[in-house]
Length: 109
Image (cartoon, rainbow, N blue to C red; front, side, top):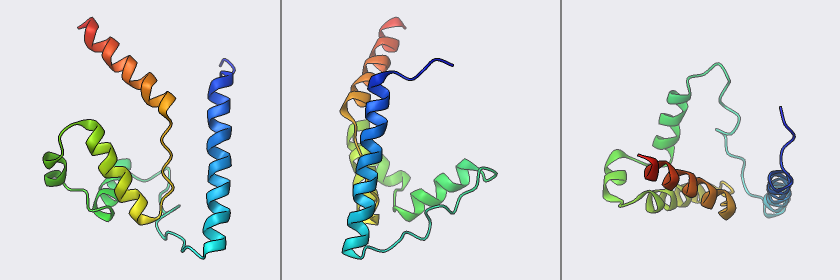
């Protein structure tokens, strides 16, 4: 396996720093622990836990149908996670790279 790029490592280290900051902030502010964090096992069905998360976040098929576009749906998911007390990090560089790959794939079709 090749060594990760410097950009990827910078991104990962930045996320780790934000996560540590949030952990300290949550402790100082007396924020509660989320009882479902760490409840999954590698032996569990990913689909089962996805369904549990959708239910916990009140994200239904009807809500998805009412939201137009994937960007709006991602905002809906981020807002639901934020209301649960989850730190949500959005990394613009990764989003742009993902979008570029998707558009390139569409153009090849």
